[in-house]
Amino acid sequence: MESQRTFLFIGLMLVSFLLFQEWNNDYNQPKVDPSATTQTQQANSTESDDFIPSSSDSGLPASTTLAKRSVIEITTDVFKVKIDTKGGDIVESDLLQYEEVKGEETPFMLLGEFEGNQYFSQSGLIGLNGPDASSNGRPTYHSEQTSYTLTGDELRVPLQFTDSNGVSFTKTYVFKKGQYDVGLEYTVNNTTSAPIQVQLYTQVKRTVQEKGSLVDQNYLGAAYGTDEEPYEKYSFSDMADKNLNESTQGGYIAFIQHYFVSAWVPKQDQTNTLYSLITSSNAAIIGTKAEPVNVQAGSEQTITSIYYMGPKESDVLEALHPDLDLTVDYGWLWFISQPLFELLKFLYSGEGSFFGLFDINVGGLGNWGLAIIAITIIVKSLMYPLTKAQYTSMAKMRALQPKMAALKEKYGDDRQKFGQATMEMYKKEKVNPMGGCFPILLQMPIFLALFYVFLESTELRHAEFMLWLTDLSAQDPYYVLPILFGASMFITQKLQPMTVTDPMQQKMMTFMPVIFSVFFLWFPSGLVLYWLVSNLISIAQMLYIYRGMEKKGIKVRG
Image 1 (spheres, rainbow, N blue to C red):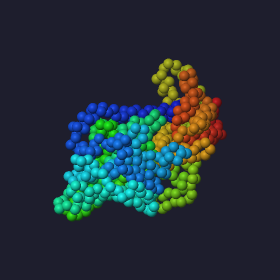
Image 2: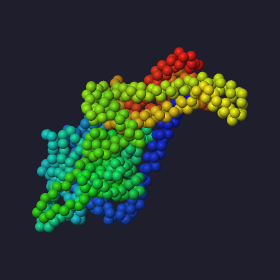
Image 3: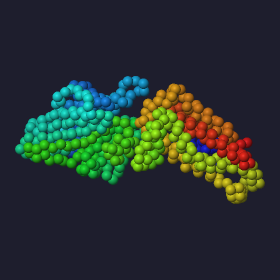
Image 4: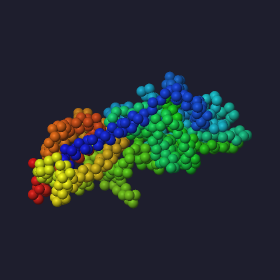
């Protein structure tokens, strides 16, 4: 197989992969008819009331109403959070360690109201005596302060409410230094003479949004995990088609976006119900409902859960739930992407663990761009035997071109005899016609796995390299890398002159560097850097392999 055809093959594979992803995402975009949604909600009103208090079925009021409410502000070293006293929901969360835009001081807003969309974290107590199930609407909590600031290792923010029967409910959020997981504690003090029953629900609410462009291959939607299914995506269209209703031991629910995730992790030693629905206001909700809790007369009981809102850091997520790290979605090649990402982190920091046996600390490169170059060198070195087999096969096939031409002239239009003679020639010359293609097929999963690593790694967000490359997660602002990549393809073509005779194929191969350069203009610069370095290494390997073959008397270049 010719080198030019190799480029075309890789290009078609990559474009086909992106087109398939785009079709899949577009196909899964929900087309929700508001009237149909309303009918569905009315048909399932009993079920919806079981899972979500009736006063919150339609979601929170608009921002004008929200402004009239009392809002509590919490500041930690990683958060700036706003909690609405109506229901005690988290209605805004800024991540102080992450910029919204590179070079600006505005922190990244994960939860809140932006561009006409809502993204909230909600929780409450329903059940027979839950305050959120009251016909009077959700409770309005009282707080001793309007603002809290973390000064030590832990900050507790208590919200208090007492119902008409004298039952006291204290909803406490627990923030810890340097952590993106927030504890939720509901303390129910039953001062009456009769037992009461409450049930904790936790959920995330987000306005249905469409995915971005063809280059944007990041999943935006919900996901959940059960004791049988560790990770299952549940897109907006899945919610529109069918409400989720799963009972499981433990489990979790999450909303996923590029680089960040928010997730509720209920108690793992109980049976929880996972649910979802889309409201008439086009908001998608996914949540958990815990087991009912009976609080005897004159007694007190505490109900807990954990909410995570922050970056997709695999180790941190796995510590909260064994399967929550799967929300760092590396696609179907996750078993290749995960070790590659661990290698990338090790190259950057120099710290790691050898299969959990002992820790390693040798000092890293300290630059994500250099780490990308290093992992490219390692991967290309490991794949060198395949590369050598590929180029050797190509060279041998090229050397047989005169004999192939002679066979065509001898047998003319007799394809059967020409085919038989060609196979005999391959056998005699010990050449495998698929020898150049098979190594490429073996390398493609690694290329795609690295594609997902660069796409999903939070560490690469706003990561600087050098000179003009100040953000490896964004496209090259001056398009230098895509142009250099096209130039490297052009050099490769010159090192391997075309042997195809069809004029259309020749024109296509000639324009391949231009096509790829244009295609890569919108790709993250970190990914283009990988492909550029990979091409440069391939050129070096090609020259080395061909030089060795020429020393053996095998004609390689025309």
